[in-house]
Length: 542
Image 1: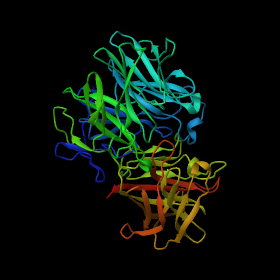
Image 2: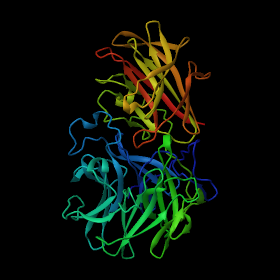
Image 3: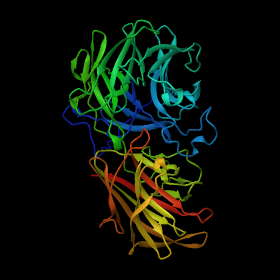
Image 4: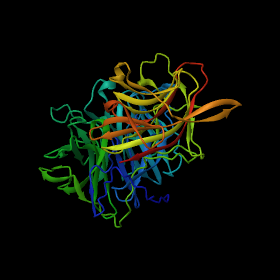
């Protein structure tokens, strides 16, 4: 069992722990979609979908199910068995890593996930904080998603999964097959265990397999992402037939679509359910619900009617036997480490020369050329991004840019189906600051400049590269995000006085993900001298 110490790092933007023995939902106001959770000893671990972002399969850790930190990733890249070479070297929005399931079995941490285009994968490790083994393609094929294994007490191993209608041409169906004891090879035919095309539980998917008191349970969402509910299936036989009950829905609350997640038992015997809620530009934020077993059914939330509860907004914290300090996932970054901070993900498989972290107090990012057939930033791979951390916050970046060619630019972006950014751009006359906006990026919407300002009084210094004299330009870029994801961009030449640029922008989610924010640098023309920027820090604050 690895030893893991909770650092006293607490966000100033969203803290779920109320400090009085209670918590408020969401426990993570960030896009950890399709969460799953396990307990190993006194430690809780969570993973979530990562789609086309790299690194993938985030690993989060908690001691009490309320205070979470991100501690690792299980996937360093998306160069996987069965995937054509270079497929994920460009952004593949909405593809990649869907709905993982994490388990601990015989001293190994195991994650299964489905790629809707290539099949079901598994990746393992004995050290959850270290490197993970090379992933294995367990069940190839189109449309197989949302896998969940069950390591039965009789030694048999089963795998259940759902089907993506966009690839398989049918959905709302759950199937199960037997695997060998390694959990790497399917040895039985797939068998139908539930068909949600019953006019009631349509779009059933994302199931998690459990066994308790002689019953096999499959806990699965139905009804769709935004307005769905959670159902429980149970049977004495792994192949069914299964009884079904709805065990969690919105009820009279404002928590829409409370479903898809993982069930976990504390050291003290309590049961809890972690799930997501779709919050538009913020993505699928993470909630925690108490669970009471009633006549052999896991009733989630409170105020149950006929075994179906509704989600809590605030509640007492889980009893884990001890009290632990408040922590939250890291957001700000002073770029003092020799490795990339865990809050950052690339838009696609990173390529050599995109940039390098350092212990010099900055990360250096090199300008990349626009891809062939460029329309807008939807297909720009070298965006360094992180999730939105709260309903309202301010993000400020201090950078020093060396822009060597007319049209080269470095900026701060809010990325999604619609996107906007503020960028420093080099011109014949000097430098400009401008805001650009693009609507319907996936549909090849055209980017437009909202406002462009000539920038004077920039702090510059001379740097040398192979005896060439270069002008390094220092600037601060900022975005202020208010409730609902409304953004205002600003800039400063001294880090003290900030001037707004352009107009307010409404952030919009991406494909199956929330909006993301981060940095970029681009060379306008191919075969020009490479520009670069040193990012001194990126800070989130109120």
